Image 1 (tube, rainbow, N blue to C red):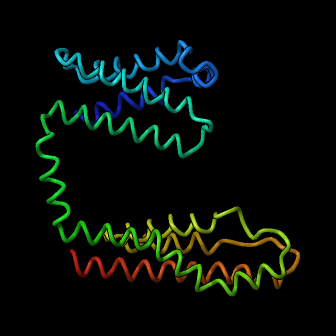
Image 2: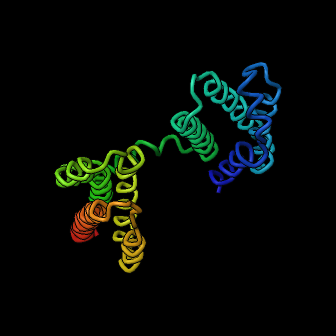
Length: 239
């Protein structure tokens, strides 16, 4: 409950009560922006208000100060892209976790719990399965379909898709399929296959369009098949 309360305070601070006007002025003036200080104050204020533990004044101060430093670090980066946004949010979550552990006096249980996870057969099997479908499986499919990819490129002057779009689509679909298998939701996989099957290519050259469709379907079926096999193996071994 405490962790969720702190997380709610963070969401209210960063996404609900922070306007685009605040963000633009913070990016422009950085440490001289008054909104940066107001924003940092709100992070601690909402934490204090939602926790309602009036004796724990150090927690909102800690959250306000660290929120200010993290945001200032992000504002001083050359680019405001997805990477820095995710890092910014990760740092905030780490701070929330530290505050949570302090409030529940839970620092002494971190190491034993981590050791227990590393000794858990099921946990290791699931982590390995996700790492396999995210990284090696994509490489295997890329190599297996490389000749068809090159064949289509010879007959097409323009790029087949957005840069690396196919790679990320494949990663997300394999994560979804594996999750559905591990949570015993096999029927939902059919909806994913049906959604992928509506993919069409608009091209004046019908032969080229057909080749592109076949290329995508081959990659999709390989992706689904390998992921399903990995998921079933994990269920058989670890569950």
